[in-house]
Image 1 (tube, one colour):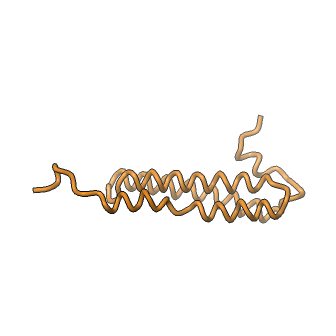
Image 2 (image 1 turned 180 degrees about the vertical axis):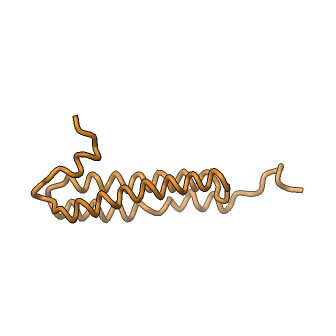
Image 3 (image 1 turned 60 degrees about the vertical axis):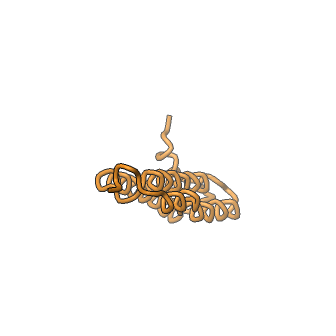
Length: 110
């Protein structure tokens, strides 16, 4: 049985080799950057956990859309899923807004 990563690199006549490498590299880069962001924020704690969680889910949704787009045979559907992957990258505005408006906690105020 093949894993999901191995199926990305199986030759498919509908998808070119360059497109397959670009999408595979973008998904790997998203995974590495997301892991780095989560570890950095866990250590330094400069952003609230709500925003870090939102960034994580946005990046993983984007990587999933890239992977699904690579499996589509129709070029229009692939282009639509790639555009949705780019649109899914920024975190939701409600989570960022809630994190910016959060009042200081009682333990931090003097």
